[in-house]
Length: 359
Image: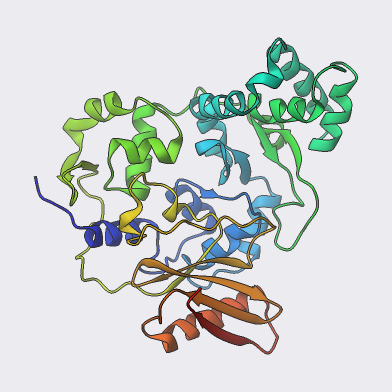
């Protein structure tokens, strides 16, 4: 089998993640093609799309969010993702075991002896009335289960039921606690039978391949996908990576020349391109950890230089600070892209860009 270098894998993933060339696509089409964007920090998705779509404007995401055409829901890896409404309805039955397993792994002692089915039904009844915050769920459920930890009860509802985080949270610059609705009621369509594991793997490869079985499991949170890849093997092609691990891919998926230039890209917090492989060497050659800062998002993130995560950035006021361990190549070009980022995030202000070396 042909061996693919980390650089070849880098360029293939960048191309599929719309990070080699900004695409002329509607936001909703891009979100579907990317298999969703991780979106715990609500404003992060706007920066993620700005880095990927040509001339992207805030309303291109805010409007479909308000229209419930895209939703923020707990899905892959048990984390909040921004997905199309159709994908949310289809993904939930397939990803549900991941979300439940994560909850039970964290709260097993707290829920011992509790009737989780009854808790879920009580939560469904509450959320059928109107969207509620986690604090409201705690208060409402505490009366029925006075001996249980109310926070655990609220998290149980979030993990046992398909929910959407409702607007105005998720709209650019809006703050406040997350409020939850039943996903099917929020979008006005029923939960589907679920995407098949075969189709889920194909969607993953389309957005993140070439990849190993373990890569797909890390991205989704699912286990035992080897048999799925074996079933799909006749319609896939295979490679090996630099360590000899088998990689799978779609025959017609883009695999650019490894020497294809990669433009500088400012990524937001929690960007999936850095989090969706077991082996992150294609994007992070020095193995550094991906920072996952708290907050509403859109003001901090990571910087790709020649396709690799080499720096972190933060916007305070109208100043963009770029922090790297070593001097970065082509700082003038990075500054030009940084100026465009500042104009998107904090338009109309006198901007400043600062490089900090040694962080």
